Image (cartoon, rainbow, N blue to C red; front, side, top):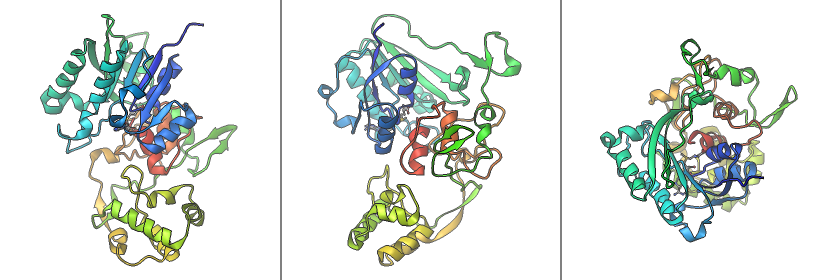
Length: 381
Ligand SMILES: C[S@@+](CC[C@H](N)C(=O)[O-])C[C@H]1O[C@@H](n2cnc3c(N)ncnc32)[C@H](O)[C@@H]1O
């Protein structure tokens, strides 16, 4: 049997990109991310080779040498057009330097970086120029292109910059388009775009729920969805400090002797309570008002944060992105972390499973963690 090309993967998240490589016959030997739930999802679905931790704290000597290709969908929030405060100063922007470090230290034959379209216009094109020049200075032949996932048979008009570099002195292998608009198929070889309806239509009338279930002999996982989808929504009136409140809740929980498991059981949740007592910004969350009052009745905390947490006011949804409705008869708009993508004919967001299908995750790929995290694990991909 032909030996598989070996791949190491940075910023792997729950493994969307890695999965594509595995399906194409590559072997991932090492991966990394510091988003706990995403790492768990990766381990459960893909493999134990992912290392949980901050890449800036992992030295090159801790990472294997024997890989041919380095992947890195480096974090994009700092660059994204969805982020109105995007700036050169955002320290996440500099995480591509981790990719640089490993290319320099490990000399893979190829590397592949991926990022949002906003990178092209940042600082009038200076940012992409800087990044490409940095990669070139390591002796790699580097090219980038803006690719659209729907052109390759994914039911989503997701545009991403793909940067490929190699040190073999050859042209970089960008893929050929395979799909196009039905009435614009001037190329006979192109197949029609895959539509949202075509892939998730069958789930449209199926009730969302927190557990996996059997639908006509097929097991459906993660068909769970948010329902706050109006153009106005009830949002918190006051600014809250998540760290302070999670610490406070942790203190009262310890005092009361209730375990998070017992609290989840009390509320009928799977793992929500754990997040109320967590400090880190990635996974901590503040209970909604009705859960807050219920929690108060069992933990007996004082009134310190009652107002801050429970006073709501009607707010407009600000980002035009937030109200995006998927076009049922075409590939969907880009699924993002700032969503919510609203189901075209249901009063709810697209469910986690529907989003996953639109991202072409396999049906048996199961997401773990709270609903917010499940959306995030793949939406940030
Ligand atoms: C854009 S996502 C990549 C998604 C992935 N390519 C996929 O296909 O699912 C960026 C990821 O970088 C991770 N990340 C950000 N900063 C990190 C750091 N310092 N160390 C490790 N991972 C980090 C985030 O947790 C996030 O999962």
